[in-house]
Image 1 (tube, rainbow, N blue to C red):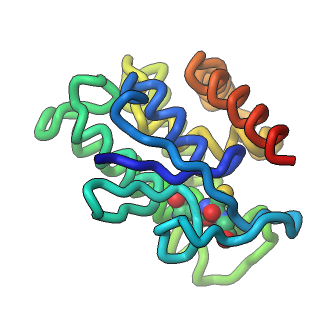
Image 2 (cartoon, rainbow, N blue to C red; image 1 turned 90 degrees about the horizontal axis):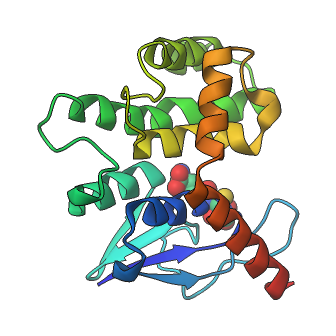
Length: 204
Ligand SMILES: N[C@@H](CCC(=O)N[C@@H](CS)C(=O)NCC(=O)O)C(=O)O
């Protein structure tokens, strides 16, 4: 049994969007949980199995998974027929895993540290900067409308999310801007946005 712990309008919305994109909503139970929000509202929900009380958290037959990249890799591997990732062992598979890991290990930390105005010599040594990150996105998008070429994948879904949330941070690069716009216009994302807004309004 698969259960996703979700809090509307949060990082777990990307996983709900993936589930929509994959057409596997009938295979995953969604449990809504509260989380502490940046504005001071909300609190850790004791029913959430995430070790830090965060979302998303996926539970599969008692096994707990956290981190969006890992959850996306897990779901797209469990349900390859959904077509949101290259097949395991196929030519695009290594790039796919690399993009998911790069997001968690490099891209989100770089964007967060930049937004927080944190500067230290260790940061570019470890992660490089937003400039190098954007160059990497540009190089991939120069070859196709999506990061892996012609086909939208869970890597696009994950990596465009901070740009969708903070549109001012999108680099002034038409290739990246058009890609973000394409990802943001996808019907699955728009459906989840509407459902999230309705759930938050109901809870208020
Ligand atoms: N690295 C995690 C981040 C998870 C995370 O920070 N989630 C936020 C939601 S936007 C959260 O649960 N915050 C509640 C808290 O900080 O206690 C991922 O990518 O899944």
